[in-house]
Length: 395
Image (cartoon, rainbow, N blue to C red; front, side, top):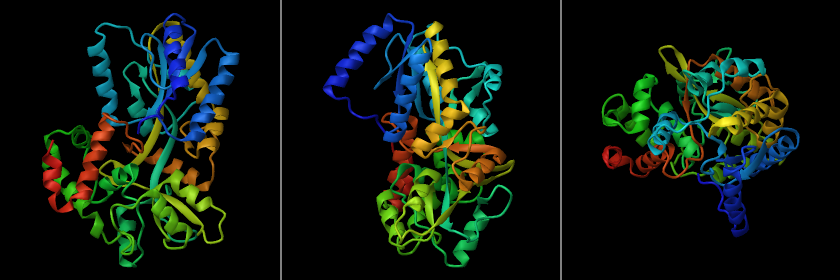
């Protein structure tokens, strides 16, 4: 999802910012690729506070500034990291880039996160991205109802079959990017290996061969999936549709992200049904994989400004600031040393700690990104279920 359009006055400000940043090593542009107004406002407040007390002026901007240190905050996606590195190398061969954050520096700061998050964020030389906030994807059901087995309190394929047998349905807004991305991997059997998942996301030949074709076939049949509520089980429902059903008592169990389902369950209307969230996990040979959205910070540029930009991200990752960002946005803190919002968040965190792998979900795919290409494909498959094979193979 693209960031907001820049008003004329703001555009002039950004243009002026570009000129000043190129000649001032003590400034960095803060570019936020997330639409949440609460999150953007809280980040702006923290950036202003940091600017008053540190040796770096962090200035919000709508786009990266050429030749400057930039701090970009956006959703992680597995294909993006390699693609961005290759693109940067092609655009500026031999140009210096920001050094990764050392593991030792991060550990000394008191930061700790899920090992599955860390495996993606770390490179050979250190952390190239720093997880700041995250969201889990799962099912919210009536308080006190069965929520899945195991210490991690997860919702698995086995639990899915139990709901189907008892006639309990789930309402899913499959018209939303994040929901359809999470549901794709849950629609059929166990998750394939990391290499196969990466190939499917990247658009390689495996998309039209097994096991990918089996997933696409099951995903295309989502409109007839027995788990989805017979009354509301179409594939074009939006988040407002589901929220309306939920508030009016028309849906007991909902599929979505922790943040979105917590918002629905927290509404004070008398008709709102209290719901408890359980994270979805996919079976895998090494344990289980978990669909997550992770908001990460990255630094581009070089020299003192880039080093100081990393320090700003470290400061955002402190337990105090993680709590502030989490409270403002509704997302969970990626620094697992920070306090939880509620018991559901604690259980989602426990599930993430025990996950052997994660599959990234981008809830706001930006135009021309790998995430946007992937989500567009899923949208086409749902729109033309009878012709899903052609939708998969067409360019």
